Amino acid sequence: MRKRVTKWISIMMAAVMAGGMLTGCESSSDSSGERAEAGGNEDKEIVFWHIGTDEPDISVFENAVEEFNKNTDSGYTIKNVAVEPDAYKEKLIIAMSSGECPDIYTNWSGGPMNEYVEAGFAQPLDQLYEKSSWRDKILDATLAQGKYNDKLYGVGMLNVAVSGIFYNKDIFAEYDLEVPKTISELEAVCDILAEKGKIPFALANAPKWTGSMYFMNLATRKGGLEPFNNAVAGTGSFEDECFIYAGEKIQEWVNKGYFPEGVNSLSEGDGQSKQMFYTEEAAMKVIGSWDAGSYKADDEEFYNKVGWFSFPGVDESDVDSSIMIGTSGDQFISFNCEGEKLEAAFGLLEYYFTDDYTQYMADVGKIPPVKGADTMIKEDLIKDIVAKVEEASATQLWYDQYLPPTVSQVHLDTCQELFGLTMTPEEAAKQFQAAMESYIKE
Image (cartoon, rainbow, N blue to C red; front, side, top):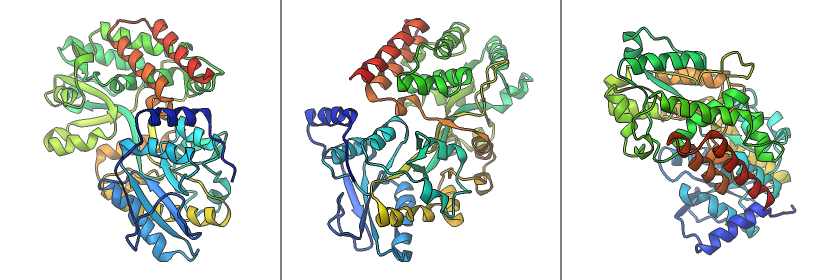
């Protein structure tokens, strides 16, 4: 198999080496308990790298491998190598740069996965997928997110995590508010809430990615997927009207008091936005679906007051408002092997998509990326989220995960500037585009 290390991987490798070789924690396990490394010496060994270092992810990843090893008649054995998430991307890049990429590995899809494909470290899976027993189970949006140039290179299997709007049902009922379906209806709700002394949106934007959720949702509702994809490919621009629109709306909403004072100094990690939501100072919160579990764990009584709706569409727009922001699989499995070995390795996915296994994933708090996941989940709030995920035509991966690191940072920085009213939407878009052009040129 010919390997062509891309400029991006070379740059990332140089950055890692400049900071010293990684010593990130890693562990591996199989039925014999032996240590596994990438590129194992035995022809019948398949090495699998993933980020399952904490529960329930350890069990989700490794139980399927154990079942494969017990039941396969391929003659191959899979060995787990679990790597701490913070070290994972760099370790994978080092492995690729040295020609030691594992046979199976997980990734977050998006731009990095596309680079792995270009470098020759991921194989097209369409023919194997068409013959699989689970081909009609997996979500269409999950399949779409694992494709590059219309070919399937990654299969999402771990979890569905999407952005949406949590809201306090009691507050909505008190003021006779209905769940909005358009941006203008959302603004009308916010105006009433502000008049009543409520903060419409709980937001702590010190980490920047929280504010980015508003930008991504607004831009996607205005322009769909194409403007972002074109800008990343160099055939479009982040100065497109949809990105200007997103910046304008953010600043309009800041001026109208839709966010708390000092929003850019508030910490999401310290729970400051949750506290506003819990104390009912704020009526809504735009965040990932993962927040639902923490609401339930923190306060069962409050959890029963919480509802959820997807980000509304732009008025009188023909852009598909079913598109979700997030990930429809969380971890995507890609394969760096060919022929008989690839066919055997691909068989691992059969175990992740059995009915029993997807139910097990739901039972440990995951939203498996399969049709009918709502029937596996007991909580009404999560069912509402799953229903919208199943309706989605596609999922736009989080910008900060999809974009190259240097461009991602500029996106996050300029988003925070928009919330601080220290940069115009046009200035923010210009900087965003300049960063993308610089990356493409390099």
